[in-house]
Length: 84
Image (tube, rainbow, N blue to C red; front, side, top):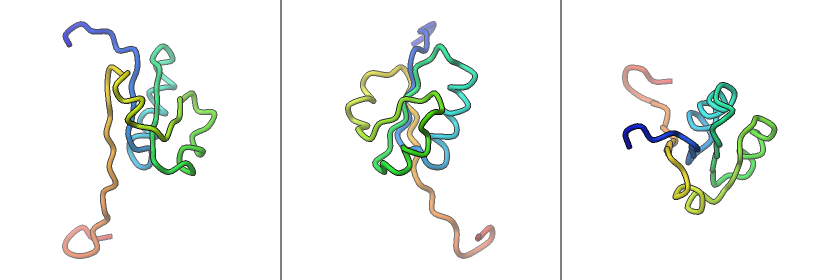
């Protein structure tokens, strides 16, 4: 992968890390094609007009990218130190 030019990035998951991270990346790197996928179409609709390609078919798009970012939901602690 050394010296391979990054042409496209895809995020699986658009909620907490994936969407916002790639939104900033799209703003600063307009030459990179950026795709965001999520199973929830309502979440995808929130990113319309932000220079991102949006899909709900991760399997179809993940094989065509240089970099994949996988963002999973992380449950909030409800007990012990740091809860809330």
